Amino acid sequence: MKKILYLFFAAILIVLSACGSSDSGSASEQGIDTITFADAGWDSIKVHNSIAQTIIEEGYGYQTDVTSGSTAATFQGLRDGDINVYMEVWTDNIKEIYGEAMDTGDIEKLSTNFDDNTQGLYVPTYVIEGDPERGIEPLAPDLKTVEDLKKYPEVFEDPEDPGRGRIINAPSGWAVAEAIDAKFEAYGLEETMNNFMPGSDAAIVADLTDAYEAGRGWVGYYWSPTAVTAKYDLTLLEEPAYDEETWNETKTTEFPPNDVVVAVHKDMPEQASEVVEFLKNYETSSELTEEALSYMDENNASAEEAANWWMKEHEDIWTSWVSEDIANKVKDAMQ
Image (cartoon, rainbow, N blue to C red):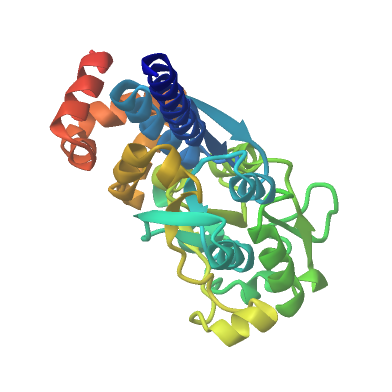
């Protein structure tokens, strides 16, 4: 009888032990070893990725990785869970798919990284006002609006199509390129101007830099915060005040207000809750971001080097996002 009871209780212990192992395995499966960030191609997202990666790796002990691609591809990766964190979702540039992803619960917004950004068609300020120090006379003193551009093809002459002007669009694959296309048609810019789509952000910067240093006319899409808008004196051409109905129909208004948010895949709160809590506190500004971007430009630095410099310059900011213990771990690792 004693032997039977012994075997009975032993069997129970084995079952309980197995259940405990199953629960432990389930919790492990819900966790995550490597946190993957989205890189949609512009410098500011690379810097913010690097800041967050440093804190997550050194403070929380996770490995991190980056997946590069177009806005559409990386955002879909976030929805699918192939990407875990998106440090700069320009919400109004992808309003429809962002809203859909939020509605379906595929992603979760954690914080607003910054909301004081601008975007649109820019010209060097000397085009309108001249630059006496450089001996540049105003090239188009009456230029004020995007629609005015069609009056000045000779100021923004297309080197491959003499007699017509050239407007630099956003790169193919960027959500804003379609908005520029719509503006081009609605304002009648095709009457005198060519719609030129560059291959990359670097191509825009190179074209602008060449024109700026030569004092030539240039017009194209750009945005802040960037090293370009921090370095060069540029003027954003005017458009009617933003109106949602008009924007949806023709895009003939200013770009809509654009909260740039930190978002994660829906599973992240369970996979890495402490990292999610940190990212909920992540908040900067266009000015703070441009400091890092200016450092990149002036020192020919990588995004990682700029992030490291920024964190040392603004220790008071990033340490407020995490506990004292985590902050000390990161600071020790950065020494």
